[in-house]
Length: 227
Length: 227
DNA sequence: AGTTATTCTGACCGAATGGTCAGCTTCCGG
DNA sequence: CCGGAAGCTGACCATTCGGTCAGAATAACT
Image (cartoon, rainbow over all chains, first blue to last red; front, side, top):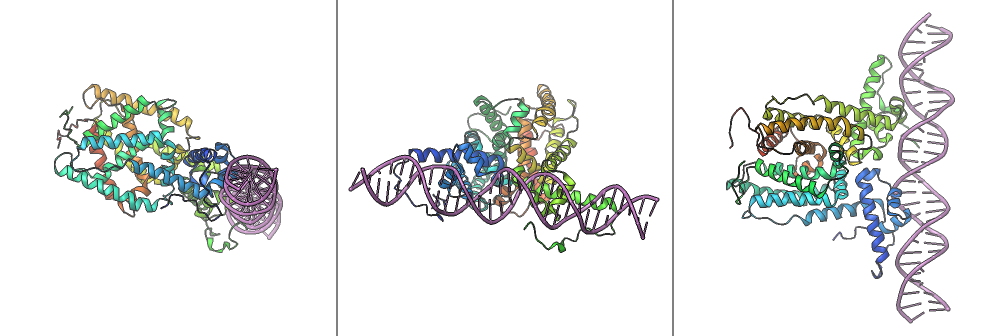
């Protein structure tokens, strides 16, 4: 339904959607530049001028493509939520808790790794009080959390993991994984690195998986190591 | 057309009031208002006008007290770093890992709870790439992390906890605790609460302590319950 | 009281903000 | 080759930005 959120208040009519190489490239460039700038400075702090410069286009062109600053921002948020939703596959009580939790941590970590700017954009939006995402948080995302929480509780009842509060557990996983994108500057500054390598990310993922699974008393069916 | 031409309702300063009292109160009011606005919108997105309005003072007065936007921002950052440093008491290899880690989690959680705006201000600064905190991150804070890391490693060597990477562990604790301040809007939206009560915070703290300590295989000397 | 020193603020400044629009260029079917 | 439409952009607009400053208001000290 809300696929093209450009508020065609101005007479931007649907073109034949034919030729599009330049259009696609410019659009992609603008979205990438805008994601960087919005992530860094937040909605209010970002300027169309800065976005246009990063995209290598005149400011007017950005507005020609995107209609308005608000429309551009909303479009970026929706794109990020779509990425997020893409990894929310269904799980069942019958699944193995260890597998599910590890996949959860791993996919969330990869999302932060593959789209650090989008991750920071989301963080900035939440920091600002989530003015554009209230509905999403209280609706779609809340329902998703509650569904997962129910499954975690059933696992606990079956003795497959400790009876921890599943919502706090989800928040723990979110925060721990998101941290490496949102607080990248802090992580790099403290560890003295220039960037996090793939090996670093793999190491962190392994660490988080081990600590969180063990911390929740998840019994893996693969082995019963308690070390 | 600067601001409302009706200055009547400010009603702040009584003529008979003593000298330093007004100054202190105004200064405190400005700092509190600025912390809110900077936390919400970041350095670039915050405006002195908004800060002045929240403080109930004319914009000129804010500049009279604080000199410049940059100076005000730096002062807030330094105040927050001071709060942070205040809970960085020394620990020793001789201490009990369970006690230290729990105290670590608890004090960090309370810092986020007591100063959520300051916590978000810090988060916004890091999101922006830490332009004002590079030095602090690469110097003071890095040294602190390394010192703690060394102790964690010695605990691991003595078999008091699992040989996990101490730096990732510190980041895990930071992220998990900071989450409830920085992502407050998300937490409230998903849980459907209006605010987090003291009981909620206590419950979360207990949860985090249990999961993280167990996840790192910390042996408490109090008892050996593995539940 | 009068005089000085400090505290405060409205009016103003140049720069930057998001957004508009007339008119330019480019493309493409006929 | 033409003509209309789509793609694009420089010039411009009202507003807001951080910051300055002259001078009013107040406090402090003879």
